[in-house]
Image (cartoon, rainbow over all chains, first blue to last red; front, side, top):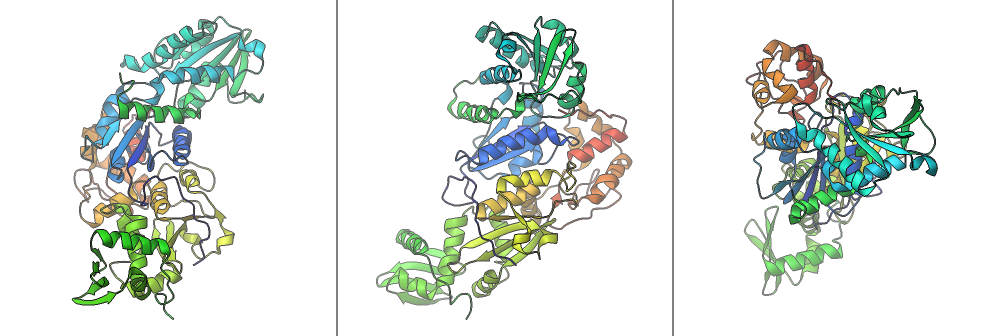
Length: 279
Length: 296
């Protein structure tokens, strides 16, 4: 046995260690194959754990541990807010998440609240815009940006594509000089059409995804004509870059890695707690 | 000299006790403490002792007071699995208070999957917990990298080669670190390495854990996992052979009932698996020809 010297305490607002008043669960897709899928969600959880906001901060996933179906059985907070780390309202937030959360726990309606997903928050529009401008090095290029918001889309669920369209509509209202379009993996307009859709010298593609799974790290770059060797190292947030038919292409990490998404999650909890901003 | 005779009760514990007995009598470890006309009365097995004040009581019953302070003012969480875990760690059900404090000064250690969890207390009865890999249990503290509790999920998600560990029960937990923690952080830390394990263990030991067998889990699925309803006991057995054999968790679920899959359940008594995880679900789908890596 060795001496334990430093005691490290996570932030906690109640007097007793295991009496939790306010809990939050960040609920995301995750992957049984890719570490990168859940990684940004863990990063948001780490950020929240360092702040004196919640007594208990958890993550839960559809495709990795801990699962949606076991998370509520292991939380003890008086009030728990489940924040979907999904980019759209749809199949996962309306069907899978509520069903799985209650599969093994009796959901006490008074103690658990599922908030709106982070990805549809109007604030995310600004995060997309800042990602795009932070992806190009020079001011001159910034005025030339066309932004492709890359989303999954789903032919059987129009709500999946709607979130990206709403961000694009909002971008056009808020920043008319920025040309923006939404492109999709599974419905038209497809990712491969992004460069044709945007009549700009510089095209920045920002994935409206939470995790860095296979779609983001492999499928989308390929469809944009980029490969993993096309790394850029110019102190911008762009991870890949190239040039196609005179157009400069920059590809960034998914919006799920944006640090401000942690604040969007807190905002979703506040909205759910107060009834403000509920659709 | 035993651990209990060298204990001193910190002022905050004495203050808390005074406040508590001003409100109501206290029951702790088979002892009752209440205020009396002459001061404070301690009653154990029908015999009582009177003390003029809490300070005098604390001098005579230092272990009792510091233990009460620890469980009722530091830990709390009555009826939670976390509290049960911390009490199990100290073996509160097996040892008398005196025996327990003697052991606590030396330090206890118990294993949880590949984790070694330890607790010790100082001269004021304050507990300090520590977590490390069980294979590092005997190593000197300065040979191990001290980590912050928020680092632990990163350690838990990949092995020593940086490979992803989707199966948290896999016997590939990284070594070389140690986490010093208080009561709050230690329970979370164990759950960070083995998600939901504390709650599942607590339910299993009180027979409240209801496994969800594969066919039942498959029936509630929609979308691309709906294909799981086509799985057969053979295809599920194959996935179990491929993945669960390496997992330290004890599988409680079967195809339609417990024990109907070959191989049978193996694994740790503490880590229990009540339902097929995403790794097994994915393997069953692949085996049945639905190989689509829907990797967001």
